[in-house]
Length: 93
Image (cartoon, rainbow, N blue to C red; front, side, top):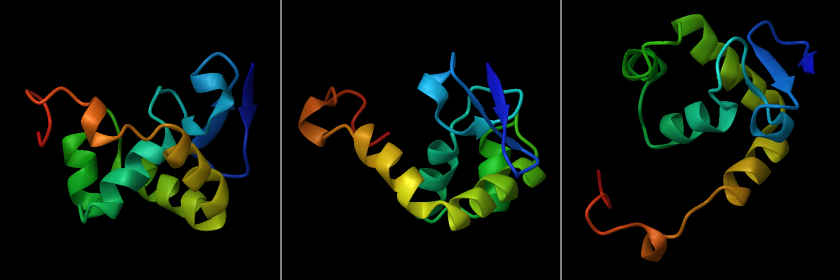
């Protein structure tokens, strides 16, 4: 079941990532955009690297994060993969 939020581009869908906040119409979690932004990638570059998103959706995700940092940080921590579990062939890509 898709649940709307107070944010234009952000929804929750129980069938996608267990209800984690995502960009409406995609399977892209807010945390993916936030993690990319935290690596120093500008919003204008994020949407170029994720061509299925619009710049408005990227800024919408960052706005949601600004208002829900604790929640999104918990999703980031929950989905963290330590370097020793990443195959050396793809580490650092």
